[in-house]
Image: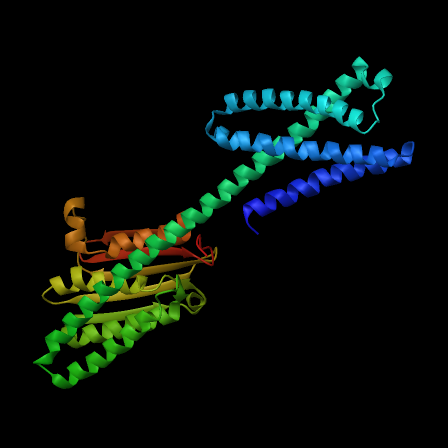
Length: 350
């Protein structure tokens, strides 16, 4: 149901209910003639048409852009004028249907009461209209922001896949001349990893176990190239396997550890991957690698570091807001530690 259909449905139901309630209570108190019934229906129709005209006025002059105090002032004046017009309409309607009682209907008390009641009806309508408008705009804004975040997230994921492919192919290139058999095995591993990567295009999160399987394939591939220069240690607690993480996130961190840590060391080094469950349904991931982390200036960061760290931070922010955390720091003179905290099932995007 579109907004226009919903608007007219609520208008007809609302003012139709107004006519029905008035006819019902009038029939209970003193009885009611057919002409009086039609007079109430005509009055409800006037309410419907006048509120619709007021809505057109609000939209034509874009009252929603006004400051709060000016908006309130204009609404009060408009509602007052509508109340006056409604009292005049009641007189004309009763006159047209022959239900006008001049001796009673023109008394100051009756007119003032009708003015006050009309003011309340219009005021209540305006309140509902503005509340509905602002809530609808708020929901539209949320949907828009969610769509923008989804587009940005997909863009970030599209940047990660080429980065992964480039590093993996570099590993194979080093093996082609040295050991064709190992190169063939490495190509098979890459094929499996690419198939897995292509399956993740529409997924925001995957099981930690699936991500770890890809990481293990990647490190096995790199172990062929580095041989004894690369040592790998996995410390995965059982509770960690119940968590989901963004696809290729841990993979990207490990790639950075290889590219900026192990590959720069003559003797190679260690990559240690720890995953454990926190006390408050949080997954802690720690990647420790040999080397030293030296943050680069913003002008050189994208060229030298690629998209890894920046993309990881942005993806965590888009998916989890401030519920997730990321930090990278040096541990003494020999190791770099990357730590990530991820909440359990608290995604900001659906």
